[in-house]
Image (cartoon, rainbow, N blue to C red; front, side):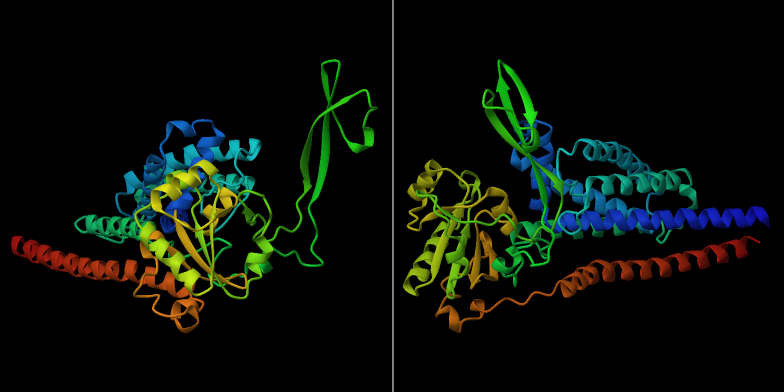
Length: 434
């Protein structure tokens, strides 16, 4: 009896660990698939931190992003349903054995601000990520050693069907989000957000505390000083280092600015305070931007001029690249400078288009889904696209869950029927033999 109880406790603990791992991997794969370009940017951050980004073309990095999200999702699904228990538990253990030391390195040396394990959906510090991975590593080891205790939810004959549908689902989701925009926007520039308000700091908020260090040189010797022990004038100033001593309140949007190309004049406030409609064309890297829909962009610019709407093209590229773009596309609109990371955060499309009014984001379009002449038939005040687009993330998640689980439930139902029929046939055969 005691042996049986121990066996039952072990089985329960192994399956609980299996469900935790499955949930983490499915969630991680799903949020990466929803925002494949965001995952690509995070992988590029890693490659840049390790000094090897020049060896990886962006197309290869994007492919890695797609493969990574698909593998994580499929491993989670396999573990949840008990499919290919040896293979799935082995891969997950190997995955955690690679990721845990890597996140320890990130925690110790901080080459990137966060690991990007869950994209922008859930941000963890590097130490939180390491602790999380240690727990998952222990769970994955337990599941691997006692993989025979994993309860199967599908028979061997139909498990391939579950995997095939899961693969088609996650690849289809990635393809849809690449062609259009992420179905769920986890970033601070979501539709409905007022950029100006998101940049403001509450009155009672605690500010961040910084400490300035001064590097000075004398007779070829360089030393580091603070304001408390600043030396005499015989020392030559070299540079200043600002170190974050205590993190205070950081507004959701803290790095948004628009500057004129030639003068460098900041026009952020005038753009965000404009009570009329304003189109923001985001071309974060002109040299990497698609010009397939440039005629449509030119038409939108002409439409904005005719109706008195603002139109600002935002980029982080050089004047040389801007001139090349204008020569190639015949663009008549002016370009303004904005930080590259900010632009990539604003919209996952290059180019992409935002419509704002009084600083509030009303709508966003990728280059493949821009409004055309059949949409812009009147002034924006009289069109649906001139109103803030309704966004319901709960509905979107429920819809995704529905399209993933309902077909699988049907498969599981058929699986149960087939297994029961096979069992009945086996019983009849055994009875005949007897």
